Length: 292
Image (cartoon, rainbow, N blue to C red; front, side):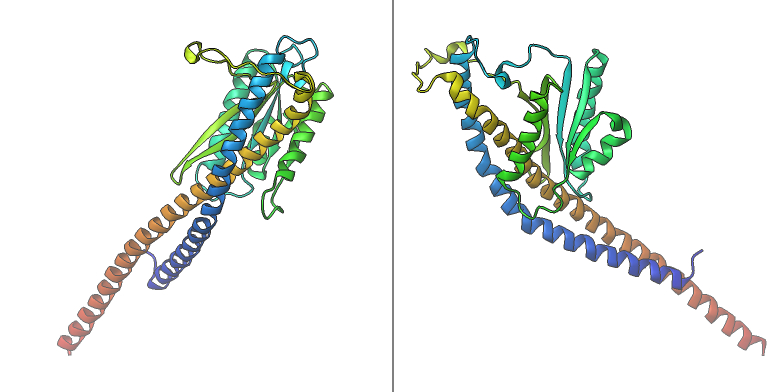
């Protein structure tokens, strides 16, 4: 049985841990609102960009000069998985759930005889994927030093992906991130970004609107597609940021509650042990007095 001194040290250590987790919970809560607003503000722009490009791409689909980012290489052999995770841990299953989705996709593709490569954004995803796919990781980008995410960060990542595509290093690129739904719910998401997936109009949507473009559709797409890729990456980074703080807030709240439960149990054990020792000493004193 542990001594009273060891018990006091254990209780003090648990209380110190509880203070840390409570502080981290409060910090995550204070940053969550700003991150959530940024993610929600980016959604309409990204979704509208998808609609605009889909309309133009539908008109240019049959054109022989369609940009390669939309038309693809004509092959489906080499897949690049762009996996976006956090830079830090202590956020529950946030990072591991994204990596799990990417790992499942990679194993499914490899079972079909495809070649898989990884482009990691975020230290945690790189560390988790390195255990299994170290030789298949072609690049890792860390954003730990970035205090506030900006479009320029996403644009740099998009340029690196496009440069690899133009060099013929892969045929298909899919983006993996966590979509923020609520503080307690973050949804791991996979989205194909190269080649562009054009959503077809439903049959009951009525006649499609006809547009005339100036300049030609192919020329517009040549400028819009790289920007759209950067927009989708930026949206993923913002969604990830909000999801991270939501997951961290929930994880630290659970850790604080668990620490409180441990402190109560340890305090009860300490008090019972102390009371038993005092009772034993009193019995020894009384027995000694009666013997005299």
